[in-house]
Image 1 (cartoon, helix red, strand yellow):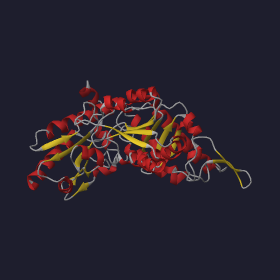
Image 2 (image 1 turned 30 degrees about the vertical axis):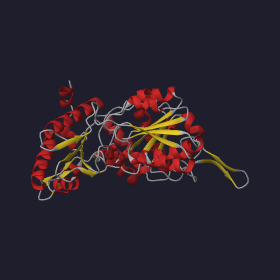
Image 3 (image 1 turned 120 degrees about the vertical axis):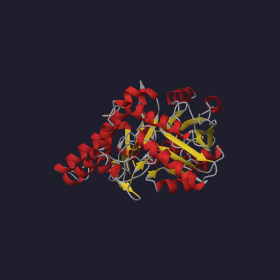
Image 4 (image 1 turned 60 degrees about the horizontal axis):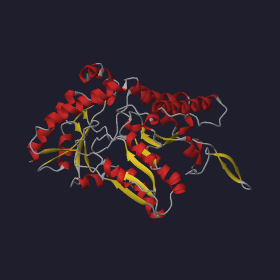
Length: 414
């Protein structure tokens, strides 16, 4: 079934929409871009939406009465509703625009966290978290005296769900966990984790940065309290992302930043009355062009149908895994039964940085290093891995070009 569905996806037509994929590097070698977990490339429709904003209706939003302001405001708020529909949130007011996943998590930590957490309370994260879902909670632990508890990960890269349940106490207030590991590709059972958290009276925040481009996300079905993602992981621009939060939680949370746009009334005599969500959390002029482009990126991706996208990326993952397993001395780090299109690997006798630098000479772009997941890599006894990650525009031929180049690099360094 996966094969038949994948064949329905016209990958050549998709690739034709990405100008950068036609680039040649290093003596005419075609670009093979396999760094999609770090950032995806941007298709022509998204570039056109960006340019159209600046060419036709560039203006500040919400308070202007002129035509350009009306058009910019309508486009910005349409983008918010597009995100709401994309995540299947109940209300458009539950969508807050941020600079990305990192800012979204920091927003929750510094608003909900500071308003609700007390010394001795517990926030639970997993061992596979990105630094953006570790450091904000450690900072709160330093300032508030809370405890950060860590769900262990086994050597397959799978969360220990028995340990997860056992870690809860009457002081556990929040679970903050990634939907998909950026370093391993592991897909976590979010609905099950949400049910367990809620059974213990805790909330759940999900880092969805690595999930939204690869599978359909439904915050209502998953029953999560907060969900964050970034535009540049989903074929959109950098500098924009979104936070979903249940309205009753957002309404009770204090603002994080002060300034224009997030107020209802300001007085020297009576102080400030804040706007209702989502505007309470969007101080200042927002990233208007970025939101317009994000809207177009989401519409572009959803037009492809997620079942076809997921099937195709799984086919790429399977083909790459089978070929790489035949390479002597290569170990794939993270072999969870449920994985997205990410392969982290190390090779005996070869440094990951050397591999990354040399394979670039063959036109292949992969990521090397700790992937902002140092605690996770240390649990495997590693400081760094190489990581190849796939997007909807990648091809089986590119996978072969990557593995062929990797074999040539390893012949040079070992």
